[in-house]
Amino acid sequence: MLRSRLRPISLNRLQIITQHLTMSSHSPSEAEVLLAKSGCAGVITMNRPKVLNALNLNMVQHIYKQLKIWEEDPDIFLVIIKGSGGKAFCAGGDIIAVTNAGKSGDKFAQDFFRQEYILNNAIGTCKKPYVALIDGITMGGGVGLSVHGQFRVASEKTLFAMPETAIGLFPDVGGGYFLPRLPGNLGLYIGLTGFRLRGRDVQKAGIATHFVDSEKIPSLEKDLTSLKGPSKKYVAEVLDTYHTKSAAGDEKPFILAENLDKINSLFTANSVEELFENLKKDGSPFAQQQLQTLSKMSPTSLKMTFRQLKNGASLTLQEVLTMEYRLSQACMRGHDFYEGVRAVLIDKDQNPKWKPERLEDVTNEYLDSCFASLGSNDLKL
Image (tube, rainbow, N blue to C red; front, side):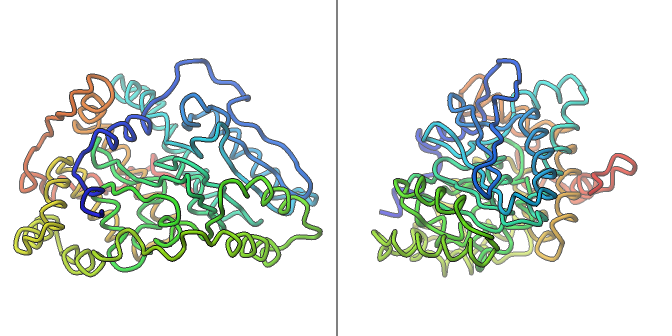
């Protein structure tokens, strides 16, 4: 039932968020990401299966460099990106390293976000077809590696989420661009609540462009790399064929179908406070569940995310990433990000003490400072 899948913070959800944050401590090496030519394609394989292919700065740098080389390579007609290990595409970014750097004032906290967002933009502006095989857990940094490309292929193993408001952050990596462009208020709902989408629902939500059974993905990849003189049209035809062949379960309704009207009406608001009032006045089981979920999130993150997505609806991807870099640095200067990571990942007491703890104490003046230009330190794309 839908209701059971909308419980505010289940153990499973906390495990997922923890996976999204977990990083290994071994030293970086090029083997963390495999870069290879296969037929007509350049293939990127994130190769850290023990930590669900979590993205670190070393990987960002290698992927960006190779992507730019392949864009100019006349023998490469498309780019494919995937994860190794069978469980995850990419479960997120190097949050522990960022946390440690931010606490100590280390420049890494600037460099990681800056270079990650530059890579997100390179994917969004890639001159060649870009196919992300999101066959497994795809969160945070993994969303940034996939959602801005031309093609995103989900499978029954895909688990998509942006759970950042639960750790005092915001749905970054271009979340301010793609989330407001989902139908109705779906993106705002996902961004604020961290709701998880699975399998075919990732495609039905408009996040994935295609759905292909996991067992068919190796064959799909082979057919893509074997294309003769491929163009975006031919790549789309191959993907469409596999999508059509993967029809099992297609008759099931979208997981949020019965609540879309409520999402579109209740999440239509001019402020987070107004949104909370809408939910309280409605009083339905669905509305009560959303209040329970949102009341556990960082008030600062909720307000930051609300403005981020409202602004992002009318901005270019480049403008959004510039805005998000400013927000990332505001989070590094603030309290809630470090407290969220402590509560969810380090001490694991799942009891963050947000500051401020009330929505009304997160002032517009403070938010204005978070969105303000960083001058010469602004992200330049």
